[in-house]
Length: 368
Image 1 (spheres, rainbow, N blue to C red):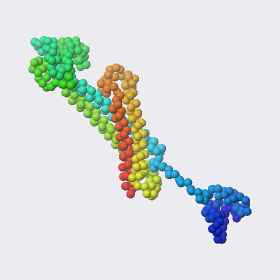
Image 2 (image 1 turned 60 degrees about the horizontal axis):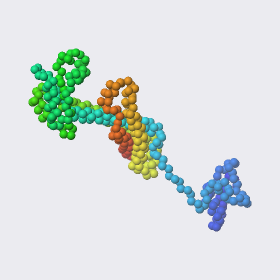
Image 3 (image 1 turned 180 degrees about the horizontal axis):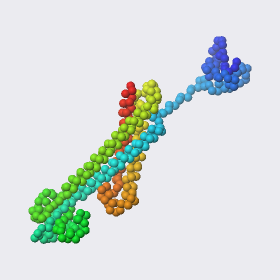
Image 4 (image 1 turned 90 degrees about the horizontal axis):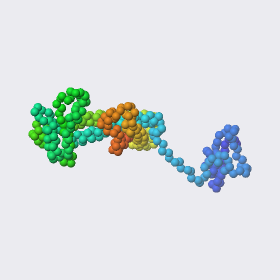
């Protein structure tokens, strides 16, 4: 007999352990029948049955087989090409969102500082008139304002200072000396107990007909209008970034479902529900959103930190730096600003997760 064991004939002896072993491992002992793989069993051989090649690979009778450990293979491979490219795209989207949010935040903080400074000061203008001693009227109006309730300080500006205020519009010329330049009084209001501006204006005009009080309300309205315009523009950009992110995640979800169609079908076959499959996808996209959001936020933080240095390297000069400081402050973010960027990362991650979840449900239900 060559190539395999022959199945023993005749009645088996119940006490024979060898016969039982032959029946149990019949398929294991049967091997290939090639000339190189042939094996002949010699009953008179002194070797034991356990020393045969087939017996070495057969499980020992009475010993428990080792239980296979389950493997948690993800439905969507995290290192796929779609995952890497999608991470880059979401990082760019988060970078743009963080830049927009940070810029709007800085402009809003600067505008609030402007409004706070403007609201704490008023300006009194004394117009020169024929037959009136302008200097004397200016001093009397200054003394009157200092004695009013809610006025912290009142300082009359000199004639040279008033002319310098007109130089940006009229330039440096000797004509200013011949013009009747209005005189100004800078009045600082006590913020703890401010006065009634309307009553103060009426009393000042009644006593000094050539004087007028400006509470800068027009400038405050203009600053608020500009700030709201920037805020609306920022929200529009954030909305577009969010819409683009949703469209990208929906497309990536469809692509992932199409490339893993066999896996999804097998999961359905073994009893997996749509909720389980959607949970696997949302976990994948949540991790992707967190990674991409962190990268985008860190790049945006680097831009805000390096902005003053970049402006100086570009050769803007001290005047440009001063104008930028008035417009957007110091050019960096405070603790609240960085927390806002962290909130953008959380929002992007949640948007990726929820979009993938509802996208998977919609695709699976449409195929059902």
